[in-house]
Image (cartoon, rainbow, N blue to C red):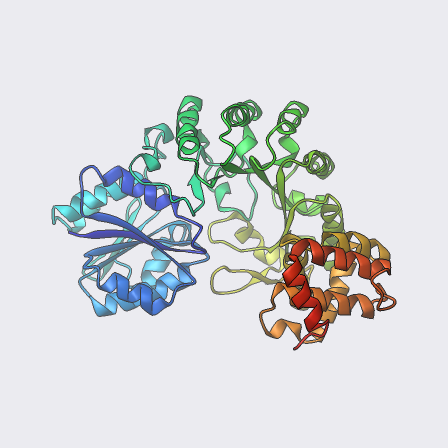
Amino acid sequence: MKILLTTLNSKYVHSNLALKYLYTVVADEYSDVEVREFTINQEPIYIYTELLDGGYDMICFSCYIWNIEGIKALASDLKKAKPDMKICLGGPAVSHEGLRFAVEHPWADLILCGEGEYSFYRLCQIMMMGEETSGSLKTVPGLIYQVDGNIYANDQMEPMDFNLIPFPYSILNCKADQVVYYESVRGCPFRCTYCLSSIDKTLRPLKLERVKSDLKYFLYKKVMQVKFIDRTFNYDRKRAYEIFRYLMENDNGVTNFHFEICGDLLDRETLELLAQARKGLFQLEIGIQSANPDTLKAIGRNENVYPLLHNVEQLVMAGNIHTHVDLIAGLPYETYELFARSFNKVYALGADTLQLGFLKVLAGTPICDTLQEHGIVYRDKAPYEVICTNYISAEELARLHRIENLLDIYYNRGGFRHTLRTWIPALGKGAFGFFEDFADFYYGAGYQHRNRKKEDQYRILRQFGQTAGLIVEDDVQTMGAQVLHRDLKETFNEEEQKRFYKKGWEVTI
């Protein structure tokens, strides 16, 4: 029996760690199991043809909110083309309401709920021996399956000791042009109401010796980036400190390590250590989500936001660590005006990246129990994003989407730092007010209707500067224009600058 493990990643540089775990636990026994990854950006007909021509008897899809709609369409078509092919689904997008999914999508023969290593191993045993019966499938923990038109659901097993699960890169190569994902602990000690990690109440770390051994392999291979998918890497300060220290002492000068951390758990000792790291060695992602105390309490984040902001500020001032901070719009008790306050506080930190996200209402998360209380309305299809709440209207959230777009173009992608540092205080409305006015100008002029090259974004920003009175006259020596020209010169080489100025400052809609 030929089995494929596959998924649709959001980008080529991303990879799927779950598939690697599943492959590793069966590869020694079953040579007819393969791993192949695609992306949501590839043509559906290309993926469909590749899978259909592969001669697979069972295809197993790893499902997330960013790919579930594409996988549903793809798997349904494959089942129509080859009715005898088994379709197996797993992952967070199907685990928490698996029975309902099975009822609504009868082409889904098998759904693996929860952690899949042992369950997949047992399922492969059954399939490879040709013993697919109701009785045998009943022995697969967490499996939802259909036999003769009836749907059955098995209980999930207790989580395994994480240390028993093999290192997934022991038999799979790391691609030099892709991010390598790594997990040093499963579970999360925190209970953020919007997060699926709040469901897993266990915390299962790998032994420190195992972690160091795994990381040593990545350092030896000189991979581009290792991204820890631990939900809160520094839940244990001493453990996090020891791993940071190990990576600094064994730095190969090439590999970058990305961590999601809780900002208010950073202590002075860790901050002092991180300040000594090679520039570019670490990236830290810190979910602030809101600066409104009532909102933080409502979503199960009881930390004091001011020590958190102070710690992030210290990281930014050190200047050697790439900092990524998050805000979430559409949370309980946060109005448009209160979100603007949160935005201004977080923007003032000067982090390298400020991600403005939107609440996703995920099945199984505690926030689902409070939808009526907070008037949360969300989209029917993945990623189940918030439409409006009792506190913020659909129109206000749509406006935030416009601000998010310009924040990404002009702040997160870089190239405009001198201009933003000068123009935001000059406009006198704070960072949120600046992007709010800029979004009104940008969308009012119709510039959103086509993809724009970087050089066009300079022209558009200049037009906004003139409209807002930030560029008073067409003179390079005027401060408003001077900083924009400085950014342009730092972004483009001399030949590109000549072509830019030759073309002029007009923008074609």
